[in-house]
Amino acid sequence: MAIHYEFYRNPDPKGTGERRYHARVVNYGQVSTEHLVREMMKGSSVSKGEIQGMLMTLADKLKEYLGEGRRVTIDGIGTFQVNLRCKEDVTDPDKAQARDIEFKSISFRADKGLRKEMKQKQILRSCFKPHSMPMTDEEMKAKLEEYFAKEEVITRKGLQIYCNLTKSTATRTLKRLAEQGILRNVSTDRNPVYMLNK
Image: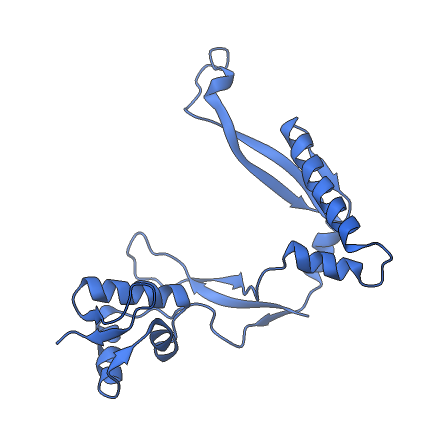
């Protein structure tokens, strides 16, 4: 299977008005541990419980060794390493103490073979838009006027489909429009249904 991508607009903090985009992988869901275990069982004589036990042991050992400041390399996967940071700028290392240092993150460097395999994967543009297309307040109001000319109420799913938005953007948009008094919720907070505020 190919890796699918879509373009996302870069932020414009300086307000130059220039439109620049970056490519991002379209994730078609997450592979859970349960799914991974089921897949590992196929064509194997190892039981589900044994595979789960091995994965739990691997996770425990990873935590243990990283907690000792070691790098952990798993062949075919990659190397994990703990990163630290100073809480404040250090001007004299001799005066800095352990309490001035804290955990920052765990970095991962993919195995050379894994990186090589990913480079050989086919990359295709996604056939659907996984993110919301930018829309100004004026454009949104015009879309709503058009919608409410035919319908009495709108839901999050309705707005999502009608305006080609993601679920989260549709939810935020409806909430914002309700706060501005443009829409009002005529149902419960848990299952909101909105009407145009006249």
